[in-house]
Structures are given as structure tokens and as C-alpha cells.
Amino acid sequence: MSSYNVLVPRYLILSLAYYHYNVSLIEDSSYDKLCKTLLENWKDIKHPHKKLVKKKNLEAGTGFNIKLRDYPMICLVACSRLIGEYNKDFRKITNWETYTGECYEKNNDKPDTSSDSCI
Image 1 (cartoon, one colour):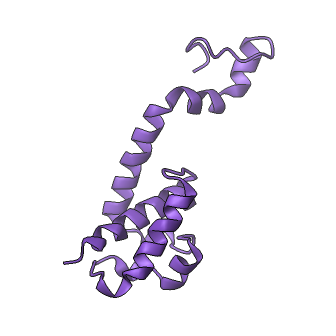
Image 2 (image 1 turned 45 degrees about the vertical axis):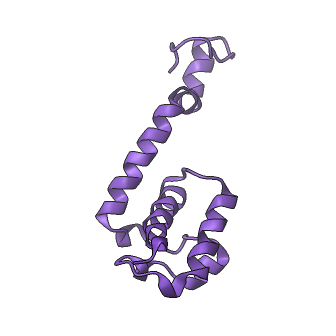
Image 3 (image 1 turned 90 degrees about the vertical axis):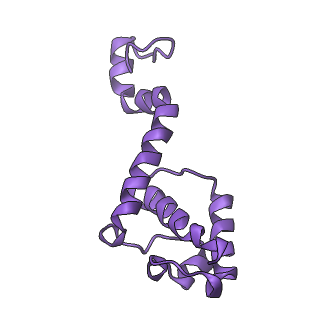
């Protein structure tokens, strides 16, 4: 079995996060490299979810065309967990951006980033 098989779920999970949940878990250049590696090793990859990955998308460096309903449950769960971990690490930033309006209201048009009062 090819060691490149693991890249299929990685591609699917990262595409799901980016295109359906607006979360970029890796740099764009790393995603592009992932697409290129998948494309270069396409014939050696044997994975049950390979059918969801289209060569034309890999050539374009995208996973935009994959419909949410087509993702396997295992990818949905893994993506959800990764986004949860990502958000936990950046919780204060994420929440501050989400509740900016409340923070400005409570702090006389100046966000309070020194405490959790608005978070």
C-alpha cells in the first residue's frame, strides 16, 4: 500500500474546513504542495475515498467542487475535531472577533483585550 494514501483524507479534511467552514488549517502553499503530491502519485494511490478527489481539482489546487453531502462521515468528524482544536488554541482571538460589537459597546468604542470580560 502506498504511503501517499494518507494524503487523500488529509486533502478531504483540509478542503472541507476551508471551503465549507471557512477555516484554513494550513498555509495555502502547503495545500498547493499537497495537491501537487497527490497528482504526482495519483496512479499509486489506493484509497476508498479517492473517487471524491478529481485530478482537475488537484491541477487547479482546489477542493471547492466537493459537495458537503459527499464527504464521508469520518472526514466530517475529523474536521470538526480539528477545527475545535484550532479554535481552542485561538479562542480569545476568535471570540473577540465574534463579539467585537459587544466589546465596543461595553468599553466606550474601544475593545478591551486585556480581560475576558467581552470574550
